[in-house]
Length: 266
Image (cartoon, rainbow, N blue to C red; front, side, top):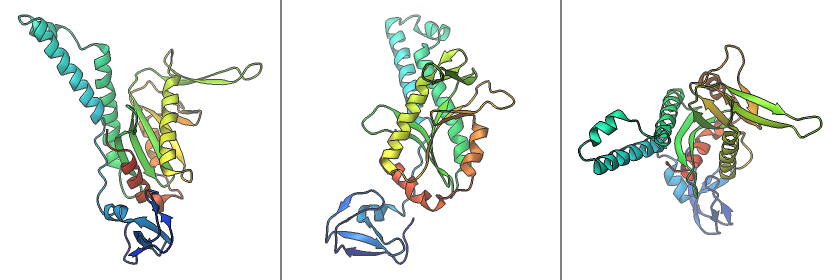
């Protein structure tokens, strides 16, 4: 919720907490009282409520890492082979570990561009957010009337599928397969990202993990599935869900700002 003309700054008679950032506010602290919600927010959050949120640049950190590795390799080859370094660079590619960063950046950039096109008052997005205390990042976040979507962009050409094993005499297990390879670790990572967002915003709003495969070999009919609560799909299957009506439209501005503050740009 943005600032209202009815809001007023005052010294608190009783201790409370900011409804936006959750910071404790002792009695007699300066704060903003909101009659419409009968809650308070701290002065710092009040100052920030009218400032635009920087949604970030899709794939920015992956692009920087690719360029760093690419430039480092070029300098190393030219230093070791002053005479033929240019020829060696022209005749050989970057190692796969470096190309993977470029692949990931391209996937995030393409999906992020389309998410930006969908962005409006009821679909607010964030890109390339750093998880505090970790080297990991979240590719995209979409705050919508139906909840928050934690979106991990993946650029694989093989077909994703769900493999179910066990279920009668041994425990049922679900695996994410991409082509013939077990990629279940992608699901584990998506669930960790969902937990980070849930810890930040609380448990009242639905939070959905999404693995969005950009260029996969999807079948003409069906194909999308859910594994351990994480949706596995492609971009055109995702977009209508983000635009759907829901019960959390009024919370979108506050949630968007809270996520932007708690998960800085990578």
